[in-house]
Amino acid sequence: MDHNNFLNVVESNPIIASVKNDEGLERALKTDVEIIFILYGDVCSIPAITEKIRAAGKISMVHMDLVGGLNHASESAVDYIRQFTSADGIITTKSGLVEKASRIGLRTVLRFFILDSMALENIRRQSKNTIQPDLIEILPGGVRSKVIHEIEAIVKVPLIAGGLISTKEDVVYALNSGVLAISSTNEEVWKM
Image (cartoon, rainbow, N blue to C red; front, side):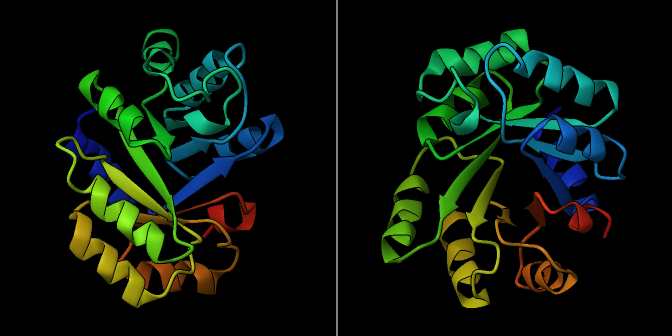
């Protein structure tokens, strides 16, 4: 899937299911969500997890930082995802992995935790990289609109919001603040 098709799917499906275990995955597969963020597993289980998602006709994104055996920030871990799984892309907090994944045709989400002004400085530094992620996910999802607009001005990459989004009001607030989509582990949110 190329960059534009990926962004079109995200824009058309602004609720992304994030799953932390097999039970959550099974429930996500039964919903209308089209994109699933995988926040668990290890090198032995991730091929089967991504294949289940592919078989259901959904997009799978593997959070490299949370998958055992892949969480050591190595480019060979990205190669593993490309060669041995059905994943469509990766999620990470490490810009070097985004660059590697982009070069080998995986979609990418770069995560930033917006805790203070240092986070904004990290975003500024990352925005100077030649290769940019397909999406930037900001956490927590309830970041003020002013901060979201400041980030948008810095990166020129579509934003999604995740973390601590658990009500319809949270979803509406995030989407009205200018993000393209939200991700949530809250199963009630997946049904909105």
